[in-house]
Amino acid sequence: MATVGKFITFEGGEGAGKSTQVRLLAERLRARSLDLLLTREPGGSPFAETLRSIILNPKTPAHSALSEALLFYAARADHLDKTVRPALLCGRWVICDRFSDSTRAYQCDAGGLSLDAFHALEEIVVKPTSPDVTVILDLPVETGLQRVESRRNEAPQASATPDAYERRGLDFHQKLREAFAAIAKAEPQRCLLIDASADEQAVADAIWSGITDRLLKEPR
Ligand code: Z5A
Image (cartoon, rainbow, N blue to C red):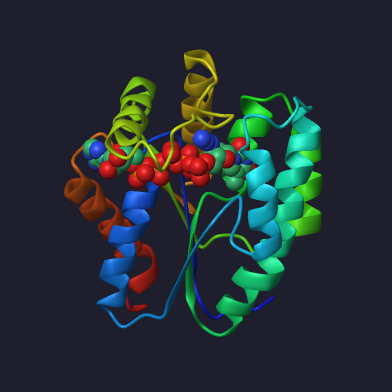
């Protein structure tokens, strides 16, 4: 598919600051008069949002990494068809809070799903709609979990109960951090690995520098 718009994804562990940085990047891109669509996974279309409520519900019965991955890809297929591809084809820039690298990190590296299964699902569902740039926010696991805890204390009604992933132990979250770092190392042409432990504006500046470099510079 020949895409006209640009597709930017944000990835990282819990509390890395993805939603905050999606918002800050969107402000800077809008100031350049770019037409943006902000979306998220799991979710981003009515059917995918319905699946999101099942996937993240801590009361959903335990299931295998394969079952979990199939739910994410059922949601992703609908999200791509109904939301992401139509927007890209109209020339809009799409910024998505989490995408396939989260499946790779959560379900494969930290969850035990085979890479063969992951690549097969990517082939069927995602290709050729790969992100132009993926921003990977990196910070120590403890800092991220503390941020999530503070957010919960500041707005207890919004996220009173930890979701199915926040409940997992430090080892799980450390594996995620390593998995995202490995993805960034393996695909430097797509991924920007950003130190997310700095303050919000400093992180936003680092992301802006990477995005302008890769997507906004005039070709020489
Ligand atoms: N998942 C999966 O397993 N497989 C998949 O394929 C996909 C997803 C697509 C979705 O959860 C879950 O689905 C996710 C992975 C799994 N696991 N969990 N949980 P979600 O959408 O509900 O949440 P999330 O994506 O994990 O987001 P998050 O970790 O909860 O937050 P965040 O977006 O990264 O951070 P934030 O909300 O911008 O910031 C967190 C707090 O820190 C907030 O109070 C900010 O004000 C504060 N903050 C942000 N930046 C800073 C800085 N720089 N300094 C200090 N404080 C900061």
